[in-house]
Image 1 (cartoon, rainbow, N blue to C red):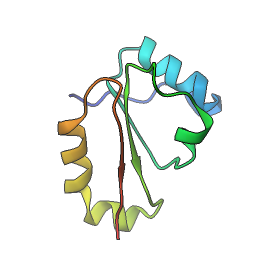
Image 2 (cartoon, rainbow, N blue to C red):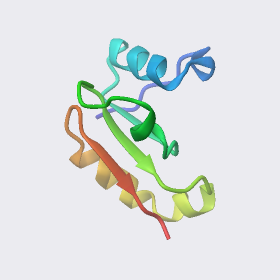
Image 3 (tube, rainbow, N blue to C red):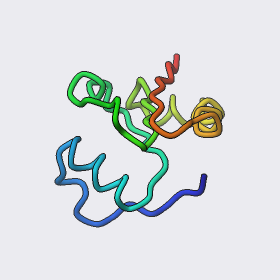
Length: 86
């Protein structure tokens, strides 16, 4: 999986619109800190894999970046996973 640049204007999209745009643009994964995504969206029909980091602290995420990259390496189309970072 290769990283793609963020698209201008996507910060104004709702979660459902963001997922739709990302899938249409060919993104394979969405890494987010939005922990309510699984409650707000029906993810069962999605092609994009979703990885939720359960903290918004960049210092904590940076120290555990290996967990994020491992989750990306294991991600399958339509999968959902959460990364708990101490």
